[in-house]
Length: 58
Image (cartoon, rainbow, N blue to C red; front, side, top):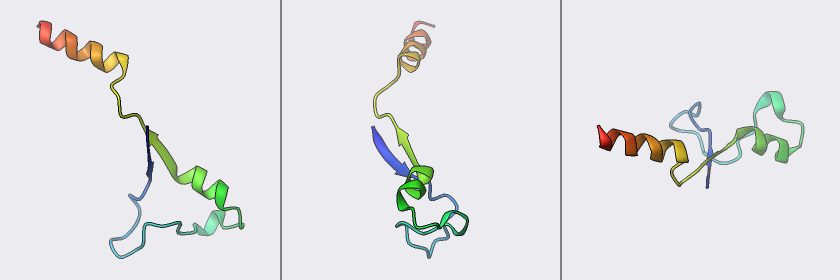
């Protein structure tokens, strides 16, 4: 599993570090990081494997 940050709303000139969000800047960095962190599985799911297998059979 890989942890990715949601940087879609950053401008090209901004840093990608822990940039405080004005609405949630209460001094609790852990809560901010949890809100902005997403996980992506690196391995195929069972459903994806099944779909690939079915496509090959057609």
